[in-house]
Length: 101
Image (cartoon, rainbow, N blue to C red; front, top):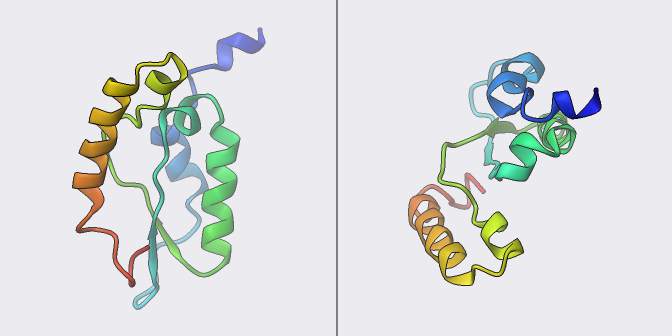
């Protein structure tokens, strides 16, 4: 059944399988915020994004973070989504720089 695949593949198990090479010294890094949809529902989109970014010569970093709040927004729960957005902005504000977009 097609639905049996949902939830089986996620960033935790596809990242090692597609990450082709270790970062080269001096290679610029990009932080990729993979939300819960990319991690579980649209896994192929996440894979292709990683491969494209690496093909462009960057090292992809998939940082751990709270959920995005996107599911809350889809249900109209704006206050809950806002709390998660604030958590994520606080988490990433010092990590995102000109050298690490």
